[in-house]
Every structure is written in structure tokens, then in C-alpha cells.
Length: 184
Ligand SMILES: Cc1cc2nc3c(=O)[nH]c(=O)nc-3n(C[C@H](O)[C@H](O)[C@H](O)COP(=O)(O)O)c2cc1C
Image 1 (cartoon, rainbow, N blue to C red):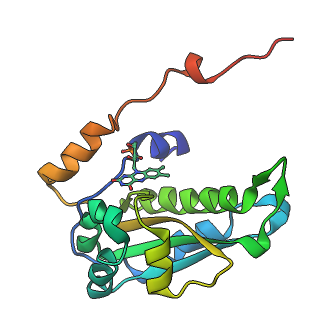
Image 2 (cartoon, rainbow, N blue to C red):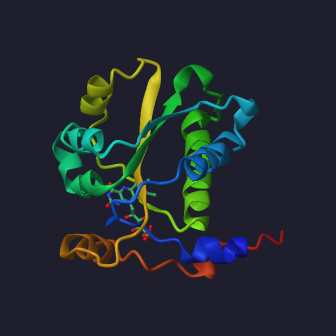
């Protein structure tokens, strides 16, 4: 598949089949994250990988009150938590690039997963404090995002249909609204 087709066909997946992700594919997904570029090549990303659904179910109950809105993760066969180690930060123009670096790396993983027909969904609705305490995450790490990974179920639940409809997930800005062709 052409890269643009891969990007255009990806959409957040919130309903999963229970089938596990084969280990070699999961390793390829993580490898895609490992190969990402980063500011001064600091590679600040750290990933926590869950492949046991019972542990994912338990985790879903430890994401704080706001995290309950993403309770659909409890059906996923795999879940990855993307963390960023602030001790590897590069700060330029008052911007902390360790968070940017981690987002780049995680998106590479999401696209690689999709190239194997494995769906995922970026999640920011969680209590970092509750999650970090539950997982005993080192003090220097931030929890950037979570994502379930798995093969999409044939049917979407009413709840997940509502989430994507509420966010108008299929819509994107026009190119002219986001691009300035600088001619000066
Ligand atoms: C940083 C970030 C955080 C997000 N957090 C959530 C979330 O907590 N719960 C959820 O259901 N979707 C979440 N999403 C998914 C967005 O709603 C979705 O990407 C957007 O509506 C576009 O839809 P698409 O991914 O299907 O193209 C998040 C996406 C991003 C990039």
C-alpha cells in the first residue's frame, strides 16, 4: 500500500476482536517506534506493553474517573502506554521536545500496526496521577498517551459510534485552511 493510502485509510478503532497480535508483528510495531527521529537523537520514549487481557481490564479501572470514558480498552488484546522520560528532554524556544518525540514515535507504531490491519486509538483521557501511581512509573517520566491495539471487530458498538460522531472524526480541514504558501 502507498504511504498516503495507509494514512488516509487509518481511523481510530475502539472495538476489537479478542485475537492476539502475533509476536513478530508486535515486535515490528515496536521497532517502528524505535526508529523514530528525535531532538538531538535523545530517544526519550518508553513503552509499557500489555498483552494479557485480564491485566488490561484491571488497568482500565485504574485510569481515574475521566479514564472510564475509554472503558472500551478493556476488550483489547493489547494495550501500549507511551511514556516520555523528561531526563532526555531537549528544550528549545520554551518547548519540551521529549513529548513531541514520543508522539512521533507512537504515531509510527500506529501506522505500522495499521499496515497489518491492526487498529488502535490514541487516548489522552486518563488521570496521569492515578495511572502513574498504579504502574509505579519513574518520577522523571510523563505518560503521553495510551492506545489499545487489535484487529477491528466487525460491528461498532453504539457508544463508539457516538464518540466518533461527536468528534466528527471523518472530517478534516481543507488544505487552504492549514497551509500558507509563503511567497515573500
Ligand atoms: C492526542 C489524542 C488524544 C485522543 N484522546 C482520545 C480519547 O481519550 N478517547 C477517544 O475515544 N479518542 C481519543 N482520540 C481520538 C480522536 O478522537 C480521533 O483521532 C479524531 O476524532 C479523528 O478521528 P480518527 O482517528 O478516526 O481519524 C485522541 C486522539 C489524539 C490524537
